[in-house]
Length: 437
Image (tube, rainbow, N blue to C red; front, side, top):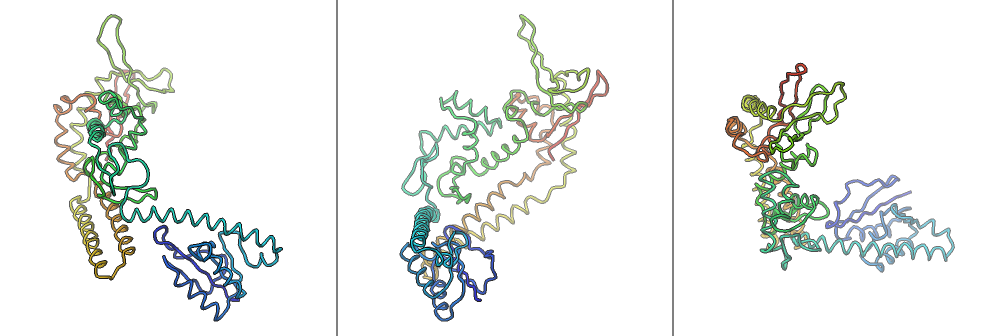
C-alpha cells in the first residue's frame, strides 16, 4: 500500500511546515511554495504508478479556483486514488459508499466551503501584498496623522497635541497625569487605555505594525524619536510594578513604602487642623493585622531618611554592580543592522539583473526589514552604559531637594524598588532601601 501526501503553502501568508503529522506513515511528500509544479509532478507520478491514498490538508490546496479544484479532484479520483483531506470531513472512500444524492450534496458543501476559504485567502493575500510594499493597513489613520497616497502623513493640526502628550509623559512618567494635561490644555479627552495605546503605537515611532505582529521600520515620518520611544517603553515597564493610581500620585513616596513588621503597604494620609491651612502628612499601614496596629509615621521624616540613604548607598551599589560592556554590545548590534541593510540594498540590484523576480525581491526585502526592526528594538532596550556617572550625580542631597514632588517621584522609581520600614520598638524605626538593580 503506497501513501502520498501533498502540501501547498502561500509564502505571503504562512511559513511552510517542515513536518506535518498526517496520522499515517507517508512514502513521499510533495510540497509546493507559491506555485504548483510539484502538484503537476504528483499527477504524472500517479498516472505512472497509482498510490492507494493521497493525503492533503484541505481541498483548496489543489487549485486557485473552484474549477481547478474540481478538475484535479476528479482526475485523481478517476485513477482510483482515495483522497483524504485531514483537516476537513472528506474521504473519497466514504463518498463511494454513500448514495449519489448524498455524494453530490456533501461535495457541493465542501466545495462551497473551499470557495469561501479561497475568498478569504484572496483578501489576506491582498493585505499581504500591501505589507510587502510597506503600505498602511486599511482603516482610519491614527490621531496625529492622515492617509497619503502610499504612507501616513503628519497632520499639522493634531500632531502637536500628540507630541505634547508624549513630552508630558516623559517629563513626569504619569499616564493619567498626561491624560489630564491633554484635556486641560487642548480640550482633548481620551481614556487612560487610549493614552497607553498611543504610547505603545509603532506608528508614532515611524514604523508600521500589522495584525500579524510584524513591524516594518522607517515607513513614514515619526512624531517621537527612537530615544524617546525607548524611554517611554522603560517608563511603562517601571510603572507596571506599581498599582495604577500610585503611578500618578502627587507624592513621591506613593507605592514605594512597606512596613516590614506587618508586611503591609503604606498609604499617605493627609491631616489638617480646623481653621488652619497647614497640613500634616503621615504614612499608615493599609492592612495591618496586628493588635495594636503599627503606628503611623511622619511622611517628611521618611522622605528625609530616604534621600539621605540614597545619597550614601547608591554610588556604592552602582560600583558593585557587574554590568556587561554595553558599548561592545551596542557596536555588535549596530554592525548586525548594517550587514542586513547592505543585503537589503543588494536586492534591488539583483532584481534589475533578473536574478530575482519582483515578488521574491519584495518578500525578501520585507523579511529583512522585519529582522532589522527586531534588532533595533533590542538596541533601544539596552540599559545606560554610564550608570556610575548617573549615580554620582544623583547622590548629591541638593539634587533631590531642588526637585518638585512629581519630579522626585520620577527619579525615586528610577532607582528604588521598595522602601521597607524596620521598627526597632514602638517608637523608633529605620528604613531599608531595596534598589532595582
